[in-house]
Image 1 (cartoon, rainbow, N blue to C red):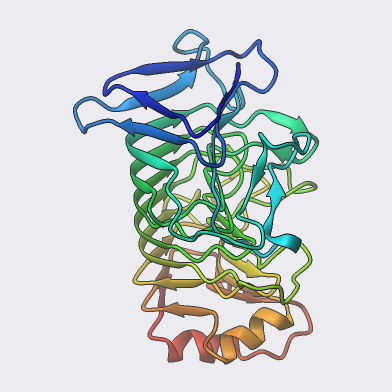
Image 2 (cartoon, helix red, strand yellow):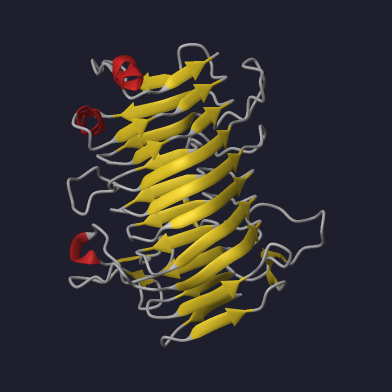
Length: 331
């Protein structure tokens, strides 16, 4: 069901454990509240698996909620505090260190962990993600984690400073890597693989490899979203055929918008409908000024003339900017 680890406790999960989210329970999920920790240190041969309690072959996206880590690091919400979207605001759903954040906060360890079939819909367009990180601090260890068949994003960071490595996003519905509210961590060695038939409803949200906002309104609130992603391979839905039929919700390898200062280096974006979208004048200015960076990347196998995208009416020289930063594109 809906489980909260509270009072600065540490929840330890042994290698090889399989934990099942109850489809019949309302919003089944594991919440590590501020001050508490998870110690889920699996191994390559004995991963820890969070999955649906439905029989194998009958599991589906959104069978249960997911894992939510809540810390005391910084974010750019007013007062430095916010709540898990879709749930009632309370001490159990709060994240952020308020006016005295601790960017070295420690929410524990997650290594060699698989999270399968999460993404419970708490409210319309407010589903929980596979792994939600609310203001998680950099003393936390996130390494070798895979999210599969999520009914929303695979990973979403709401502020925080946590560094993550070796993340896999496999056949999820909405975005693979979603960064908001001043997230400033370092994320390296990631793989995203899309299913041609699994994408969000485009009237609600389009499915992106990366989606990045400074905040929902595109404000100048600080800290600015400035995470660095390196060595990412995004495999989109086209599978080598730009005429392939895919779900209507697919859009871009990376959509950077709402005054984000995201940075993506040394990565491959292949087999998607569109490459990198610098969305809006604030992000165009960030790109021009070097606050937003997209460098040494390869965009391949995209629909003609869509390796880069800018908004209708924009005069931003996106092709020149793309080339000047040692990026390349291949048909």
